Length: 355
Image (cartoon, rainbow, N blue to C red):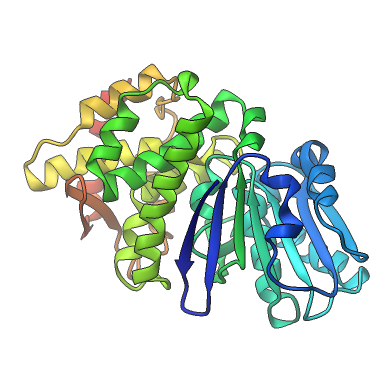
């Protein structure tokens, strides 16, 4: 098992990455709680809920399941889970456990942040993608006009990451998760980036996966510790997300995997960076890796004007001026405002290059 500590403003919390950890949750919890509510989805709950409960010896443990998929990260499900928590009698000394991918982590974390003005919660990620969302304390639900617009900064008490739960992921979910690892490598570690761009996703073994996840979490944690509330460099973690979120919203949440949309967004960020700074970045290398690993790259049906309308609602923006996270080199990240006319040209030419 690999372990690290993340130092949030309110408290430090451990991150555990290893095998069979889903059976050891009770041992890894450091506090006593009056009751425990496990929040999961219909897919993950069927696979791992009993494993989690078998490792927790507590007289008052409850669970609730929401429909699987991004569409459940909405205000209606948020309200429904609050209702369940009230019905089960949770109090201010209760614990919420988020068992699932990024959707469950965000939803359950936001429930924890707001239930009785805040109760403790623990993240138990079950996707590769959730290595990113489970660390750093950003919790939210979607609005139909934009992703993650209703939320808070609320760190967990622990992250318990059992990589054996990742064995049930399909190829689409693996691609989605590794896009975020590539993002973190572009931001913080060129050696890690080259290591990732040299692999094929269907050849990864468990020890490699633990190492990749640990490296990605370490990069994110080092940034979050410097800027927890996204006043400065934490914005860099949104590399690829300006276009990625717009693609998700335009397609309809859940129709394109978050990480697959972010992969296209990272590629676009490299394209814009090369144009804006007159430099050469590993655009072709990334494009080749995305093709090799089966990432869907056809966005011909998304009109630039529609994407720009979505991009204007991005949380990094000031007013309606679009701020993009760009690179001057791997590890050298910048933020730059791109005017709408130029951005339209970039999107149009970028789309042609992908066909």
